[in-house]
Image (cartoon, rainbow, N blue to C red; front, side, top):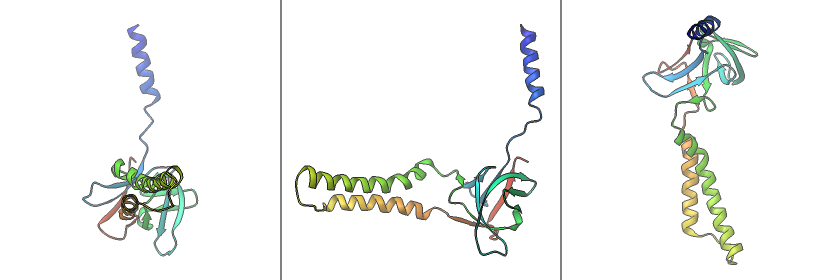
Length: 167
């Protein structure tokens, strides 16, 4: 019985020895903990050096310091700016959730108060000052969190770096 387990484990090691970890690209500010990750299958929105327009393409694989896209092949040194608004980030999930939830909560609170005041209670269609202020603060806080988030990384700036991990 012990020999069967030993052969099973050795067989698994033999089968999976050629596998390696999946590689991914990291964009970050030097000395910062915040990082943006792109893996094969993700979309990359970038501006190439010498072009004014942004291009959107799906990453298929990484080779050395080269990104193989569906419609293009780029070296990391050819990328000028990357739009990181849809990248995976290590930003706190509370902040990511708050920027989507707070505006919805604010609009919903205002709508519920208007419905309750005019339909249920039968009053005239009016805004309550306290509810309107609270709703406006919730909406503005959510949109300001979204506005303050970094949208683009300029790789020509020496503060930022891009590299591929796992090759």
